[in-house]
Image 1 (cartoon, protein in one colour):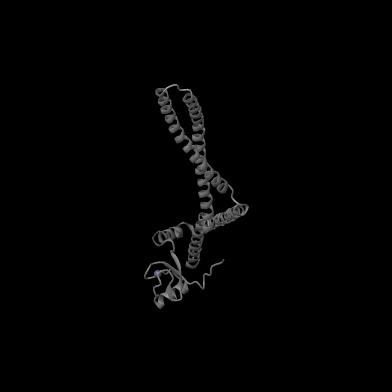
Image 2: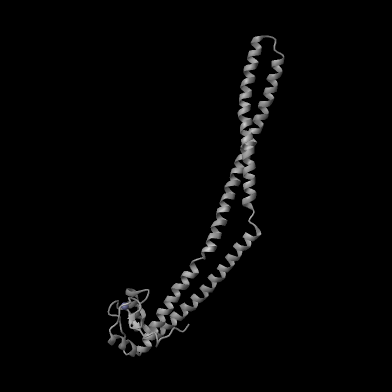
Length: 242
Ligand SMILES: [Zn+2]
């Protein structure tokens, strides 16, 4: 294989590998706007779940308090009647003491019921607000998801094409040339084959000897940057196809 052909193959490999890196990143990175929308949606969902759980707990407590309160009210009625029927001071003070006791218990439970009732009003309002994603918000989120899905699929499809081209170039280069490329790649990735930038190396920016610049232009042998040891080529002779 001629040096020029081999160099051309290496440049193609480098460009395909660059493109593959870009496409992989594109495929795996949703746009920031979508990430924000997803986070907002998830946070809202979490808050809604918490409000619903709190609502259930409050209702349960309310449900168990109510019969207690009913029973205490009946007891209070009972002692009130007794109080109206007492015949002496001893009976009166006993009934009053019972009545006080029931009223104290009743007050604690009634106060708690009132608190629960107020908090339930709050959680009801939260659930109503959190539960409804407006049509506008929903459309925005779904559109962003659909756009991202389309972009991701496009990147995936192009990536498959790049992988196919890589296999073709590797096959065309053959084992010996590929072994040489891999050796260079391992120590210099992600850019092992670099264009000259005028008369400098575009990777390390070192100025190249005039004689080296000439040799790079003639393509008779592989030429490497003295400074970073990357394989050099003349971009005028190997233009990117796309
Ligand atoms: Zn260099």
